Length: 111
Length: 119
Image 1: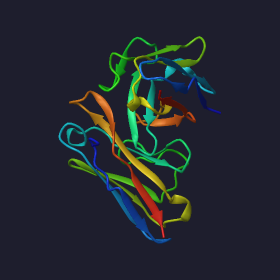
Image 2: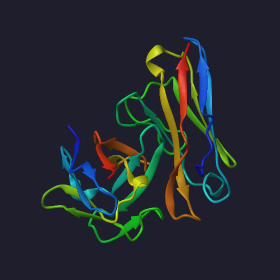
Image 3: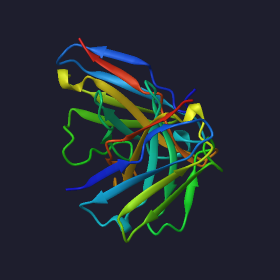
Image 4: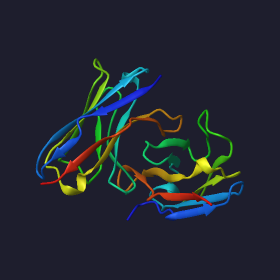
C-alpha cells in the first residue's frame, strides 16, 4: 500500500485530455511538500515531468501540467499522443516517515 | 552529457551481500545529492537511500535501515550501495538518481541494475 494513492489506470483517445490524481495526507502533500511527477516508458528509467508541483523542466512539452491543492496533486496531459502511453508516478516527502514517498503508479493507455 | 551508469547487480542467495556502483560523468558529481531508488518486477518505484553531496549525511528507507549502506567517492565520481542480509523482497531493479531538479526532483537516472535474490 503506497503512501500516495494514484488510480491504477487511465485511458484516453488521441487528442483528448486526461488527468491523473495523487492523493496524500497531512504528513506529505498536505504539509506543503512539493510533488514531482515522473513518466516511465516501457523498459526505461523514469523521466522527470513536473518538478515542484507545477514546474516543467526544460524540454518537457507544455501538454503536461501539474497542480496541487490541499492533500492532493494532479497531472494533466492535453492533446494525448500515442507516445504518451506509459506509467506515471507522483512523488513527495513524508514527514512521518522522514523519507521520499511515491505513488503506486498509473498506467496511461492511449486508445 | 550527464550519464549515470549502474553496475554490480546479479543473483544472490537470501542472506547474502552485494555492492552496487553508480559511475557518474558529465557533471560536477561532488555538488549533488544522490539517491538510490528501486523497482520490484512489475511494481512501482520505492525510495531506498540518500546521501548528501559531501557524503557527510546518509538516509535510509525503513525497509532497508540497518542492512544497506550508501556511500560515495567524489574523487572517483562514484556512488555505492552496500546491501547485506538480502531478502527476497529486495529483488528489484536499482536505479541511482541525481537530485538536480530546481525543486528537488530526480532530473537524471541511470539505466538500472537488476538484483535477484533467490536460492
